[in-house]
Length: 260
Image 1 (cartoon, rainbow, N blue to C red):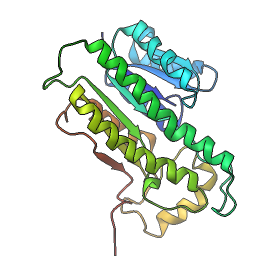
Image 2 (image 1 turned 180 degrees about the horizontal axis):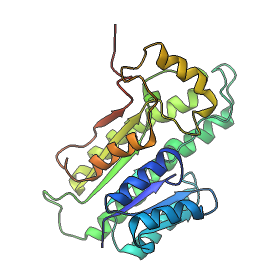
Image 3 (image 1 turned 135 degrees about the horizontal axis):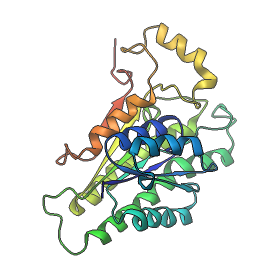
Image 4 (image 1 turned 90 degrees about the vertical axis):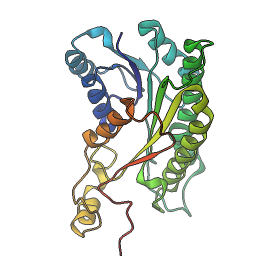
């Protein structure tokens, strides 16, 4: 049986790029998303996998904690193993509002999906991995990998979407917390921090970011692509870095590098 990966929000944008790459890398992939089952996307992934049984889809929201066990149970029932969790699903505020005008309801919505949901899905995933491992101590063995997809907004201020920035900063700390707690269990945890990536989330502000690139604010002066983020996830999921955990992998064209 190939290694099994769970990818939240793996049906579109950055998540779909990650799903494609993991399938190409030989993973069985299960997607969690809120939309109706996307037949065209699943057909593409199953064709890429060469086996329909290696791509699954569970409909639900990561913000709904009751969904977590159902999602993990589905993968274990199908494949009998868990090797990788990619906490990718995330949202921005529906309206970009100044900090002085932002609504608490929107804050709760964004943090529920971007931070609270992944935090407790990680808990569910890790407990199931430990149960599947059994009593044998992991010793030097790498048992499983967790990758949190964050954002440059974890450290870069946007005062018209404070809830998003706070949620991604929280993901950064959650990565550190889980990295330390799960290291003795043979589970490593990483954070991938994308910069300005061309997705439906950034489509509405493309002119702003086009000008930002043109002004020379990013060393690699182009939009990021979902495949760029997927490449980072692929490296971390490969098992090639078993003595590293809690690391942040920037995929932002060098945007995070301070420049005078």
